[in-house]
Image: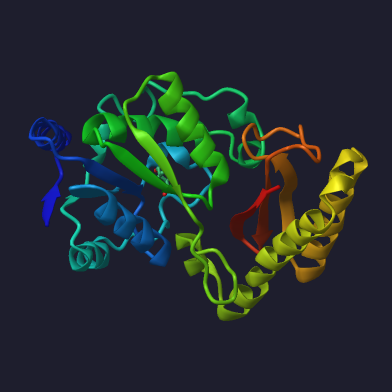
Length: 289
Ligand code: PAF
């Protein structure tokens, strides 16, 4: 396994590999790798000749009062895990290289509409930060495929949209959410939770699953415009009863992330974000009708 810190070296490696006929699968991460990341890395290893994983805590996707400084950073342990998986390249870019003109002045990638809803309401900077860094990373690594977890469903849609609109020659692949046995979606931010909070946090998936089962049991009820909002309201109340502060709980068309849903919608997503004390958790369930 090779560790590359220079963007230029990474790009030259990728160009030469592709000229030699190799395919590249890429998993961008912010490190502190858990089973969710490991399963993305395994998929990368299985689907291409060369598997590249990047580790970079991207300052542009954190707001002024968020956890950029305290975000868990465990590069040595991460590198060991990636080595044991047989990952070919770990790209560890140095911050000044990705933002050569500094934190105040940099070209931004903005994804309209999708960045005005759900997570964007409480984190308005987030998707511009993600779209910007992912565009940089994809231009550097030039992968054939890039793999992202479906836990951040909105992020996945933003990235797909950016790549399509900017004609970037990469296939974006969503990877199913990896969960703990309790149902809690794996996340680096779960490190902030106490054992008791982790037990409570598992209720988020239970409430999402209940809403999904209600819809799957009687999809025809979706033709009543009030039905999704009554399910949402019911779920929000259940979450508050479990001790969460709800940021959002929305039943949406999975392709457009709009409220344009009815019994003939092919796919829906129920997306939720809530706080458990100071920790913000996100999760979602997908429904194929
Ligand atoms: O999902 C993440 O870990 C990050 O948002 C990403 C895609 C690596 C961009 O920094």
